[in-house]
Length: 414
Image 1: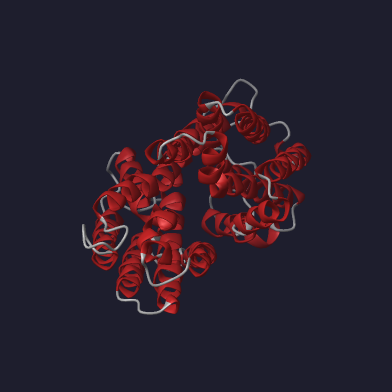
Image 2 (image 1 turned 60 degrees about the vertical axis):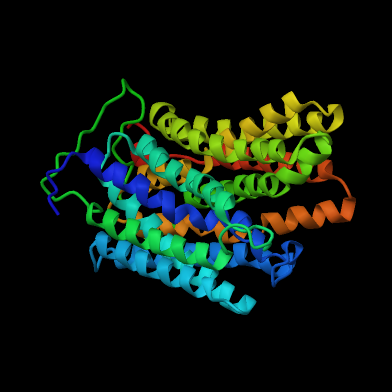
């Protein structure tokens, strides 16, 4: 690969790759025709476990990808991802048992997405040492809105009720697998790290934080630092908060505005995904501009404002307040992933970023159970407000953890 290409070529290629790798987040849409509610072969409770399985294997794929980067080129990881996603969708498309769905979409799909995720973020970030947060936000925007955009296309062409009108979910899964494999194979050609002669533009900011990392540390050193654990806990809490709201987004909208049409409900819930993508760019750039602490605290504040607004919508049945609350929810949730990526780069350096970042991403293993927790609270209390109040408490605790994060002593004057 010619590493003399403009660095934005690698960035654009990364966004395209993550648009399709992000399909693992579209399971709630993809699984519709498989549900017994739509004359599908499996009940909803069995299908929901696929989301948990795919998240577990996504984290493992990211970790394995980070470990492999010292042994193979990142483009090979993209090709491994292409093969895994093709196999995953292929197995799922011929599934006659729920186990095949778990193995295909859950295990193979999750691993494939994890490999691509780590390969793209770790390589593209090295081309933009002067825009760590911003470039992470752009890449993660692709990962965030891919499921929404492609999910919409899937929903438009698939026979969602198994009535014989439209394409079967089996054929759609197979086509998606082939498209994902082709896209990731092609973008893999443009996935590369800069050579040792690449000039790193370091920008000074008038006494504020510079774009250079505070220090370069190994993974073993990183997990011994208090800053890592405070950030890890922050990420768990805000991710649980975001996932809980996403999980209950549709039923909350229906209860808040009972006369809202099905199409309008889908639109208002879709606002979370759209503004999640927009938020990732905003918060990525904000991280570069104002540093880690204001960015983390603003994320928590937006979640609290959003959840408080949802409670108001539930009590007033105002469609305007509902729309605003979901927009703010999306923006707040958009601050989670670029903050993690930029934080790892800033605090622990670029040398071991692939492995260090994959360890930070493991917080999703715990956070993925947020939907189960939200469901249990709602069933136990019969109220969405009880879940939302718990979310506010989680965000307040997360803000405390953000306040406890300290830069390394060697970086205090950076």
